[in-house]
Image 1 (cartoon, helix red, strand yellow):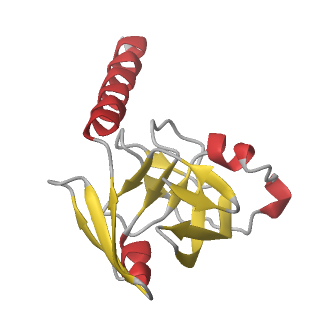
Image 2: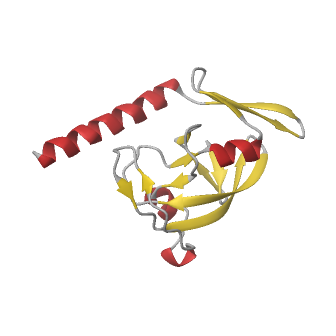
Length: 143
């Protein structure tokens, strides 16, 4: 959970293998943003389903997690995800963060010491199941 653009955002995935910071349309609309707010971004991305996704654009927004603030350039894509946003290596480096997928937590330094943000194993499992079920539905629809 973090504050993005002044709003509390849940179901954020921290992906050490991703070079992008992705925001999905539900979050984009939920923040009250419009297409006019986007800057051009035309480099294609590969989604969870292995398909190439052409981004709708990018936007820079302030993000606060655990009291530490950074400005994040999000790439907005129209693709299915049970997550509202994905934070990749650029965010990890900007925060000086150390994520642990095993422990479902991330640690990073602040002016007030080391902050530990814990994720939820249950929510992580629910998001994984949602993605697997969605992919199965897509496969059945093709047949």
